[in-house]
Image (cartoon, rainbow, N blue to C red; front, side, top):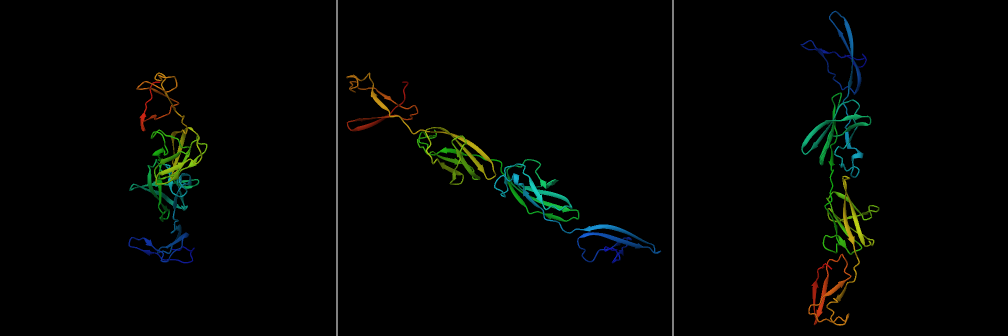
Length: 318
């Protein structure tokens, strides 16, 4: 046998079954070769036959990365809100015979074939993934039987976000009525800890301000500019590390004015000269005026002989 165009020849050995074998004793470098086989029988007849073969001992290590278009969080954090994210496979040699992707999730490993497209090798799950952590690796096998595996890649799928509470902190009226007499309203937003941005608007989204994170999951903002009296709709937009966004509304009112009330002796009990506030009624009636419709508490203070008493009133039909 010869693999150098007949310059050097090796003698094969015949085994008991009549088969001739030969194993090259020295290392043969990678490359494409033509094996020349020359056989001679007892009568001296000679025949030659050739065989083309290739020696390939190397295979590039493949890589797998999350497609930038599906890396919906910060670039390179491998967080995505896509249930069927796309992955890019690179360093795949041209002579590969098999490219498979192993996916491990919740202790279970599944193996899928990768696909070769015009732009290269890719992998996309055949169904939606549930939220959680996934570890992927690529194994390639070439036509020569060499095998190479990528470094594992761990990605997290996160498709959900929520807002726990939106509160008006300086609610100066009845607790929970979202009314305040402070022209600098203060708001608190409670969200999951993976939220990394909270912004607010009170002008229908024309302008936005960013809340400040305090304790984990707690975001606060106090309006620095004076906000005029009126009814407002607070828009709260929260975004998490995976890029999920949610919006929630809160109706609130700023009311900094209150009319000065009046109190007068009921004219029916003004038994003296009208307007002299003299009465012979032991239980005189009084008329209260200029009471705003949004009054939540009305108290009359009565002072007599150095003693004061407060009486809480209820609104009558008149």
